[in-house]
Length: 367
Image (tube, one colour):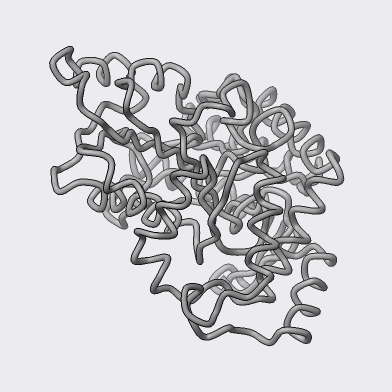
């Protein structure tokens, strides 16, 4: 890949042709928003690039505290701790919870950062329940284990499929003294009534839930945070070796995050346009084999049944000027999936190119 513009990309190997881009996770294209870019430039001019020390030594610049306060306001959270990436947010959260919990249990399709985090919570291997299967979770928690304390780890929105976790049902099954570590990386910005995530309503007061978030997706910048009750955030600051030993975010990036939060807080237009695009594509593709959530999730995925079908989709997408977003994640050995991430900035013509390429591929398979 050489460059990504608002909704197109250039990649060597496709004749340097600009293709409509449905890859990545920049759901509002804020990574190129003039106000965000300007804030980063101004931050670089004023603060330089790097504090070059951890926050518990000499690197705790006042901007980090300002951003953490702003994160709390945006998510209506009691407390927040800023970390260097969304991936690290789950590891910092896990280290903060490790003193108080005996076991971890997690969705079999959880993000790799949650899998890594589970190893930091307890020396015992995590229990896995079948993907999105509350009945299977219940079978792993018989009555005799109800007195144990667990951390349940799950994505709120799963990154490849766009499926949404049944959070309220999972919490109902969890033993009384257990916690949920909820990865909201693909939920914040796009889900909930005002884009604060799947957990925005009606469960935001539940103190059993710690949320990890990222600023590299809907917010278009970089970095991560953990939000939740003050007790748990304090433990993360005190007990996480990653937090204490890690150099924090470059200050210009902090300036970019502050501007991105301001843009999304000030205007609902981004979310309105995104959901309009989601509805348009879902309505157009409802008879093409896609399974859609009731919630407006900007992720669509299609898994070819074989290499021939994958080739048909690949060719059809290129014929319509759409970059073929075929991914093998999290491992190159995994089965390929076509994953499309809709954004608020895709035009009707972009969406029509995607829809038509899927229809043409389907027609080619059936002919």
